[in-house]
Length: 201
Image 1 (tube, helix red, strand yellow):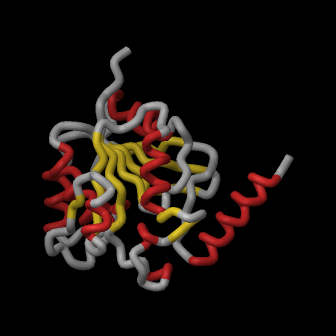
Image 2 (tube, rainbow, N blue to C red):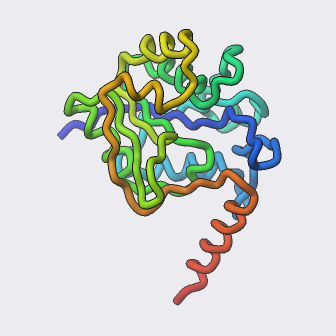
């Protein structure tokens, strides 16, 4: 069976406030920046992307050196992740888009397959839900929704939840739990857990 080609979008354009204001994509974990862990996680999907975009607003040359197109928010201030998604949808050009944050250092190998499946069944958007709850930064979006998002933003909308309320949206159960490395403490805990797992017999 032919699998649908899709584009992956890595969100790395935030201000990293809970990480002390640093560019979170370049925070180090196990000797590599977070963004390189995300690229590795996408490459090992059972259904890997046909292309990858990176949404970023600083450290641009370093992101470009990774070999993928880098998208800036183009002056959309204080919008948050939807600014990156809007640029990603504009660039995806007819392919479904899979959005993941730049701290998604480990992913279920079937995440893309699970999130893309509802799009072929008539849903506009599918988002991930794990044992910790809803994870709206992990989305699969069907082609053709760029104009819808632009209208939402132009009308003052700012939240992913608000945009999804006007769409055919479903939540998809995924496991194991998705990473959420928003603080130095969460990052350190993740690294300790990984080390403990590596050392277990």
